[in-house]
Length: 114
Length: 112
Image 1 (cartoon, rainbow over the protein chains, first blue to last red):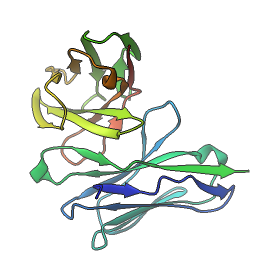
Image 2: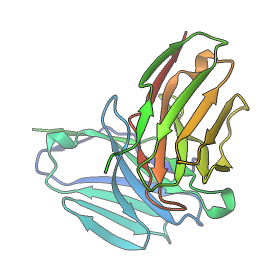
Image 3: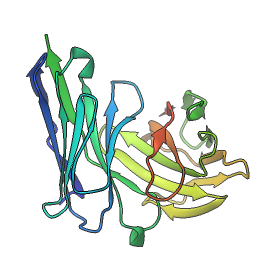
Image 4: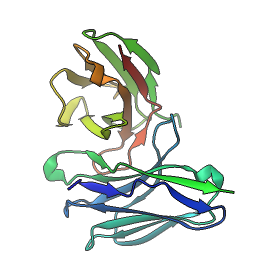
């Protein structure tokens, strides 16, 4: 079982729709959760982070965390073609496993078509 | 505030050579982490430095090493390069433990 799992996609949504990206993690001791966006040939860009159960909204993005279910998701409202990228879910490993180790999922490729 | 910078951006080396990559974190950030990204393995953690001390290390052979200087700048070194070391090497900086990590543009290393 991979430590962080994501559906690789591609997830194809029409412009203006809501894109829903999902991620599960295996280590129940994980505390910090991040979503990165990566365009082809570029480095990952942090778009959301969430530490507590519930929802966190920032503009068109909403991150949702459910620690009981070990599930984190990212919603993108009013999707635009410029949102087409790979979205990486990342979790910081529990401190018992050392400091600041980000564990990444394989990423979900999102394609927003006009 | 300037972001994370990495040099060089591109490198081409041959098998058996060694390489040194450099990373300057965001001003005020004391933690620098290094990651390797390949199409097959995705993003994998190499090591993390804080206040010139390596606090964490991933599952990479000893050919991969690093260090951090008093100004928080960091270098990583790969000795005796292998074809499989071809990858995008990313550096990320953060304030400390469990904080958000911000990535630099990366160094794309090609080993021939």
